[in-house]
Length: 449
Image (tube, rainbow, N blue to C red; front, top):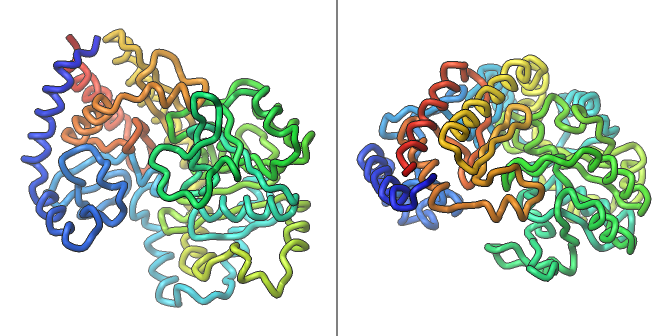
């Protein structure tokens, strides 16, 4: 059983260790206060466990070194942005060549054709467009869905995550009403006007939300990933596809995180048949980019819905979208790195990681669980896997989460912040995975009474 008293005292000890070993990061953090809001380039970086953020010196593969000389196994990997590994040699070569020939031109390059063809092979969508992020890919897909259908609403899932898409930064109150998600900064309008939010795996709620025929699109991850990995029930995706077709609603599958499942994400691995697919982060090995694909039917309707004269002012686009540098990085990533071989190596390692965590959970009879999705694995502070976003959110324990992250970091292991997720890739070995298991045992034992 976890001792709250031991947890509090051990957390303070870990903070002392952190401060002793990260003095230069602390100095840089103080220096950054003068010009960076909160002392960081993006405000959410202050949420990392520890007394201040760790400043990075260099990274290669699945390892990095901070400015104090501490070395880490990186299981965060930019929360999927660097899922393939840092500074991969083929990408370094292609990006170096590309940047020497021009970065942004507002004109297409031949690499974009290859990328569209390759994404079609993997995800089955006929037509593709490129963006600078997965957030933009989702935003633009939703805009197109509303324009084509003439419907005003979108449907998303409680505690889902689709970047900073306004319509999805929403949750449900105790009465089931749609409200802004806690922390939603300055929503343009109440999300109740734009969105319907339901719980994952609830087929009745799905049909009730669609039956008024005012929902342009359902935006869904194949499995929830940002509130813990929440798998779909058997048959849920079949019901989702059947009901969206029944009520004339487009189905958009967001593969930004679930590309961990294979070369074509869950869309290919599970045989899904969406109308549109969105993604980002991984497909250009960390170079900012995103993509959205659509069926032939949707593509033709999209062209009809966007008069050429207004193609640049309709809220879909961006002068950096599809830039030459990103297209070169994407081509190299898809052709040389994000291959079947990548998954054949790393999915078994993620499973080994998960089994190691489960063994410690069992050893100490903890009411926790661990699950895996492709080369992504996660543990959560509840006895059984969550069935929906609300169950996952209710299992959060802020102090325990901070302790686990900080204690891991002090032992050279970086987990994804804000939840307990690990991505396995690049030069991680079985020995590295087993080190995590041993370390996990050590830090859990320290808070057991």
